[in-house]
Length: 570
Image 1 (cartoon, rainbow, N blue to C red):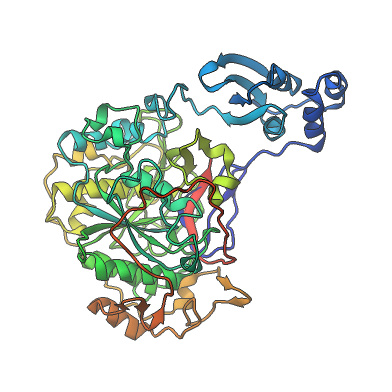
Image 2 (cartoon, rainbow, N blue to C red):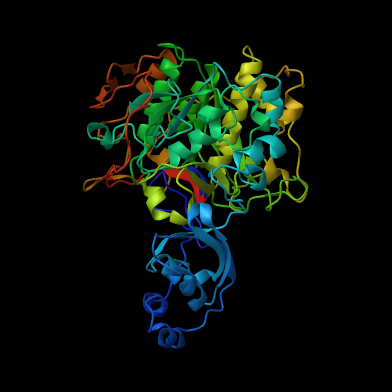
């Protein structure tokens, strides 16, 4: 699958294979060599004037930033801001820093200035002693999404928080950061990557899975037992009392093959009610650009089998943007819930919302089913992961990370589904889908091909009757081509590119035998899947709470394969 990523607003698919459902990261602005040299001299003292004369003036727009200083640096950081054509605002003693306005093309050079700890673009946060305080002022915070956009707070106030519902997240793993570190908060399924044999086993070395899991079910310890809708000083996800079942398929580069994804779905189906699990929702923030008919496609078949066995499957539509005329595989399977991204336009009200320009549209027949907030969503950060290292501008303090994409939108809907499943434990996936679609609200200036039924509204869904809904589409057989399921991008393992009717380990893929095994829940036996052994594979109901992740070194594997629908991180 292929990782969908934007750079400077332009969509640029990375050669990774499956698309992870979130918007690509905002491009990191690069300072000129002259500006960097100017900065180094500009804070040193006597050379400041001559350096300022040598540095070219900037015509870039000013951006608001928070500058944190190292101890004992005097007014050097303030002089650096002014030397770059910026202005210093108010001092923030509690964080040993100050606000400032700086030309956007000088940010990286400013970050390199002596005496500066970090420079963070101001996301509208009113900084105080806690990183998550004043979430009400952030349109992309989960507090705002739950209280003012999706209506999740109405579910919480009615007593539904996802308790007893397990949400499987097939992604890049989960790190038990604060908000995901309560005992039994995360159950670890198999690690189907080459990292399973080392210290990175089951850990989120890429950073995508932790972000999605936080959106779905994150919850700070101090929020436990509180009226969630009134707490703006703690991090709380959509279904804060749901449990995450993590199945890792992507390594530190975010790379994986379709065969790994279908093995993960197969595991979820076979183990959904085993060993104390109650997997009722499956989040897949990824996809491929394969166009094989869903009736034949193995990836679509695997996802659809989970649906027919009682699991609500939520899939990102992809981040190629308007004009695509198709949602990605497996979102194009009509049984599943295909999710596009809503953009709030920087306000908490939905009156001015639009469908995000990066969100795939449909062809008039198979469109997104619903949309959900996917623009500038704030969730939990996997410190030291690949995304974290590549996108420091997306960090909010030490704990949080901001990203946009259909990945994030899918995670919001997965959390919403968990709330509805707790409220209506006997509802079928068809009924949950019909409930979400039937209570969604169409937004102005968007076509049905872009938004489907519109923006989800749990405040309306909480009191709506359970619809008597049964979908009657042609059922997938899964007997098509694994190669066509991959689409245009292929994984490379070592020097071997994975092509043809073989899985990621190079073994022949027998679609008919595998499909029958998935229906019968016989493909997984111990550590083997369809005769293929995943060395180092294990899973446990224990969370990783109590383990230390600081200072971890992530060694990334060299792969390519699926595309994660996470588009922009900033």
